[in-house]
Length: 287
Image (tube, rainbow, N blue to C red; front, side, top):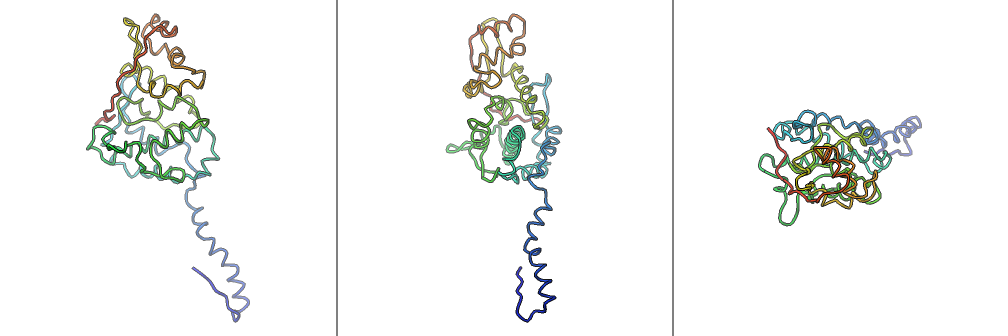
């Protein structure tokens, strides 16, 4: 849209056009401001939280979960609306947030986009690995936009969440979930900034309490733990919250790893053989 003023335009008309022209040119930004802005991002992650509460099934004992993918498939539009909201956040807006808001945003984004990836082929898959190929893993696919760039799940986890000197929090490994039985449980609530520290501590405790993925055999003095602790051992050696080694981590959580006071004492003292369990990549699905 353009406006031209000629020499024979009446003064009153010229003044009116002069006053109107800046408003007309500014109209797109006015419209943009009328839309939900990234600065107004819902840090409660209410849309995602609602979906998790409805479709995540927490197992007895509260230390594992599955997801009702078939039912969630019927709410794909609601999931997409949440994902679009994540994609709308600009790097500048993200940069103005607190550290806790940033980390909650990235963890929720990783988990939500992982669910979306599974739904692109569900129910015709038995594992998230079925979505990959010989040349490219599913985590390397760039299928969404986040913070101004086309991203893969690997980029979010390893390039943003695990970037050296940014968060340096090993507990993220029990928060980001790869849609598999071997993974830590997908919580039935969103991660939120004002409770993030407590949520991450709780997620770690629940994961270590799950005997299918971490267990101590008192008879053989063997502590068998998830392969996650082998893959990301170095992340647990940076000293975050005093975790300077896996043995320090396990000693601090001996009460959930050991079934008896004697077993707990052995774990605290480090008197065990450490082994890693095979990882179960079957889809964390339930009907």
